[in-house]
Length: 314
Image (cartoon, rainbow, N blue to C red; front, side, top):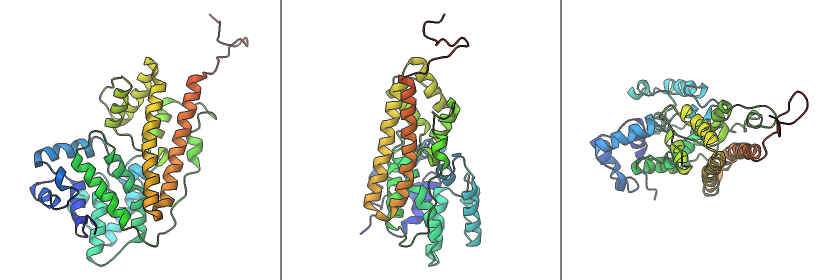
């Protein structure tokens, strides 16, 4: 028997949407996977804020849009679906975008109560919600309770994988070009934007994760937006001669995501096409990291107007 009963979709939706109160925690303590980790409401409120407001963004387009930004096209499509099916929870006006994990789970429960299913919507969720859950599970600052919530959510969706799935989109053809450092001169901002967009890089790097990488490399980073922190990680690494170390750490982090995708595909065979798409993206990131290491180990010689290389020039 599954650890999570059918009626728990509403609870999972509630736990993703806002800080848990005493009632929500009492319900969570009835689930074996969540009970050992449920803390007092005040502690859980702080943990929720740190995780979902500062580090892992639980929105669909944050994971599926090449920009990595919120309120993309998929968010609008989710809002129209809600309206068509009469799903109008108050939280729809409290969160940053309609494709919030909690709202998506609430919509599934709304459909189930009416004896309905939406195979296309389920396919959309299965393409990115497990990735968001993995970001929470691998988040260094996440409270154990929320890691458990993410794991339960991921397993629940995968176990309910529809037998008949619509054909999903193929990996973006532009991804290879956008990650190629050999064909064109690429600036630091380009690299950072690539790494911070899961739809391009295949993984999610939070501010806390970036800070963890910096500490592992023996560096300090200032507080700032996720983009600023990622940019400073590379900039500081360059200034301190630790780019190679940072690349090794990023490669190890990437390996963790790849291992999860392969394990899920083995356990849930119908998820294998999605795994292939995410592994395609991580493959592009691994290739880009390899190019960066090649440039680091074999820097190009500077050519001067008289044809002499930079070596020996004053």
